[in-house]
Image 1 (cartoon, rainbow, N blue to C red):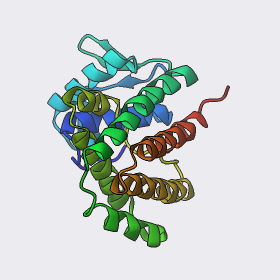
Image 2 (image 1 turned 120 degrees about the vertical axis):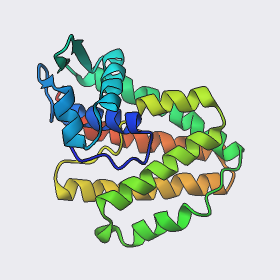
Image 3 (image 1 turned 135 degrees about the horizontal axis):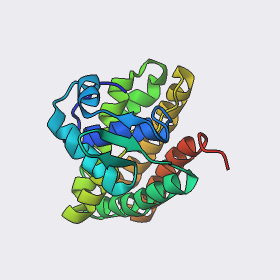
Image 4 (image 1 turned 90 degrees about the horizontal axis):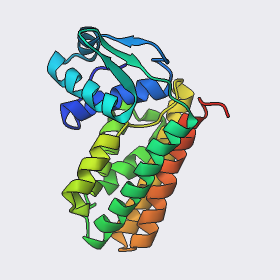
Length: 214
């Protein structure tokens, strides 16, 4: 796992990093997670890692052990699909509401176009910063605190591949999808915004499911 960049609240960033690592099989069924080791690896204190462990346990990713950290649960295709289908339902609605509420995109669109035009030169850090900014702006613009809360809890970050080529392909595809979402919001077309977001997260889900055979 990479160190935390703090684009989101720190607990959410840690939870997201651990979810992504579990989905990608960096941690497999039965692996033990040591709170202190995870904190050192991510470059954070133990407290937000402990909070992230609590969230992951509540969602079924891990089982907490008294004074022994946690152990990773068995994660299958249905678990992955269930998690992403909730994101699809909620975040598609958030995009629709953001459109109806006339979300401001003027600062986001030029950044997305720049990433599209210079796709081969986009760093992981730059991509993830814009990715987080777009999604967070949509959640805020949906203007529903409970909806934003649930989306924060479901967030697992970009669903990139493990190789450089896989990551680059994801950056390119995701950037085009971000532009499509922003264009729908700019043009005040809520149904198109909802559909574009649905396709965006569905592709991310399918990226993860490639690691989970039938």
